[in-house]
Length: 153
Image (cartoon, rainbow, N blue to C red; front, side, top):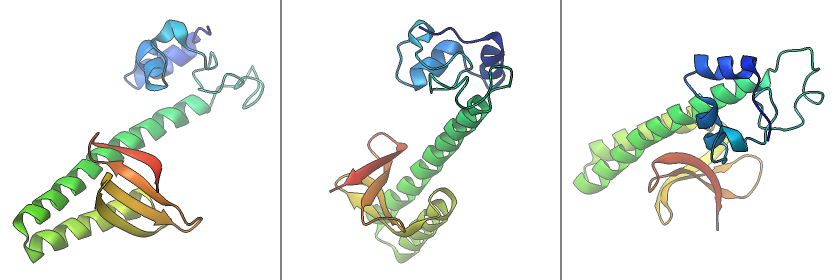
């Protein structure tokens, strides 16, 4: 079990996280079970692999920002799904156009490599196909109200 350094704990605290919360975000029950590196990176080889022991870890700030981006994407995705639900309930062309416009803006911001996207009921959420492969991905899980990246068969 790796203990986070005081620098890592300070970085987390400045971002609004406790060591325990950070560990839990990455699948551990708490700070005592943390298996990432002492600098706060989820990669337990970070020091000496991503940076020298004498250098500051750039991974932790990047991981925190990525988490924040996922939170923003989830919040915006919930708004998109609510607009889609409203359009499905009212059946009006204006509501459908508003939902589709909101979805297109969300896709452009968070998934710029998308070549197509769709609202789906099974699984319930938003899917897309990207420019790199032929896979359809569930990118917003409406049941959980959060972004994801799961292939859809």
